Image: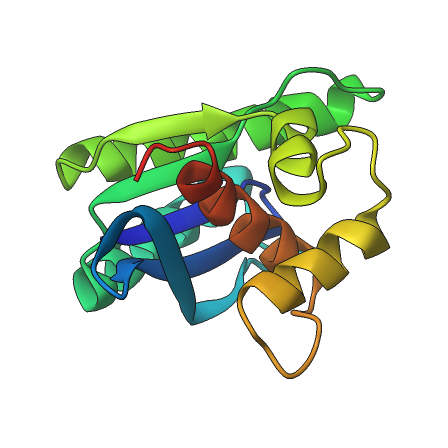
Length: 164
């Protein structure tokens, strides 16, 4: 199964794509590997609508290339800054629409749920989560930038919570 994890944002949207497979034919033991990760970036000079269009277009290309069966997205559960909350919510709306247009089911996880699944502690610091993502995916380096690492963590959460 191929899962795309998304960390939404308008300036940069992180994505991480993983594939799950049974380990040695054991149904209970799932393994996974990283297929791709990175950012969908928009320019500061873009209007809000241009940013959303770019997110839609780039995400559509990723979906076409990797053919994910599920889209796991970070849930927005609180914000310290309303100026950030509205654009991120708009980006998430475009992400949900893109998934729906491609008939891909969506599941949401809060950062707390992802941290708990990845490290066993819901209040883990970002570097701890990143090291664990690196280890779980057997990557040479910690995935960069942070938004891409967060997106991989969201995709892994889908597997670790027994969804895959």
